[in-house]
Length: 626
Image (cartoon, rainbow, N blue to C red; front, side):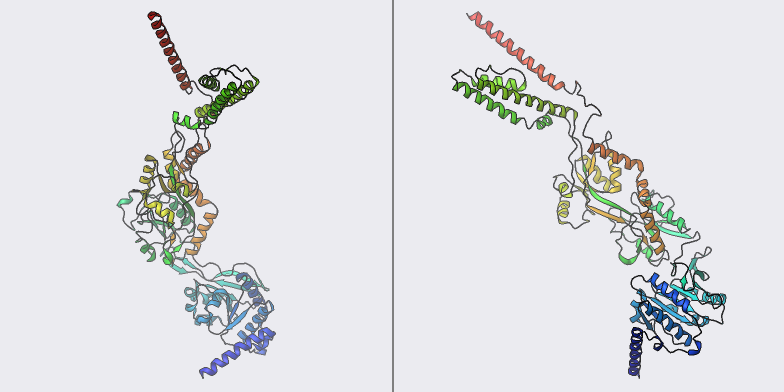
């Protein structure tokens, strides 16, 4: 018997497919010819419109054949005819709860027909999947629309959380109203209850008046009921005073921060009252101390926030990204002070002129010897040096070759004076920017010591970074690492928010003392945690997405850090990087800046006087001997 039944089902299934292909709709299901006067044309046209709206590029309609009566057969045949006309795939199913039809229900539209409103109460709604889109047609000529709506209210608890929409056929006006049932939060008990069936749309003359067919069922009005928030601490997301004295789930009232401001907006949207609780999470290492997640799993909390990340797998739902931060290298940077060593380093190209000076002296001696003139190499070197620095004239040229040689050397001396003058001017007026690191490779190859917290420094698996982190010096917290970076000309890794504070507070005379590498080491995306079975998940995610796309979360993030702090940090950074001049206009050289030259001149005069005095003394001694 079982085998014969399977053969019969197989035959019927093939007959359906062949009939649809050949367009012979009348063969699909038996009809009662006496009931052909029943008109489902408007409703089936509306179903076509719904299919095109809801199913997009993969429309598939599953028609539930309950085999109840001729009216259902007429409706099903008319619907199949319309679907075939519009080339919409369809399948007739007799068991909608079969595992074989599971995927079909998820991607398609399931349609069922009832000719008696009272039969709705006998249908097994408990087995319907939450993701299924289910359209139920009620064509009861003996029952008024209002009476049928009252019967729908009796099954409200079963369908309020599902995408189920009812179309009640109106035999008088032809305005077939579409109803669904929404859950709501009772303002007295704060429990989820069911509303009366809501009229959401109308099918009239084959047209659906509105686009909404399967609205989101989750309630968005909590009627001032508690919205329980677990808040961890991390600047600038959340700041809680005396947090060291608190335990997990302790109630807190004094709280500031970026996440708290966002949650106030969300609570206003849901018409809820914020109830905040403290949750402990290690700031430097978010992968530890996960006990707080038990509170959101068991329903004690609705949402957890405070600079959290998507690292808790599928145990919870996530709000979606609402802010992102970079993690990058931060290093000590300071302009080099003026010194004679720096001046000498700026004059590193002066050796070109020394080469020309020596070459000139040798050529002068060779030319003079060739012309048979008496020449002294020492005298030539002295006159050549004096001419190069502008202290003496060159030796008197006697031939055209010597005149040409002197002319070329004087031109070179002019260039030498210009070069030295420019370097002096630059040394006294221009202070170049500090050492700049653009890439992470440059930072790690700089030879500086990195200060990293030992328990949390291996947060990425990059081989080069891991090797570099092994050689780092230890520190106890982000702030301690930053302080050691300043003290010992070192490096550390900071989050973007902490960097703004650090750069602004450490600036001296408006110039930054710490800079960041241009390349990011890592980008982190912050998300809030939502209780997995919460009815607010979908709408909470939509609210967060809109806030993020509108730039509101970015503005609140900056405000939480401090607009003045961010502005000061950016100003200090731009002054350090962009402005390489120590003067504001004109770059005039003061007498004090040029005092070293006068000291050198005075020193030279003193030496000359001493030599002159020694010569006089020696001459008088010789005269006395004579």
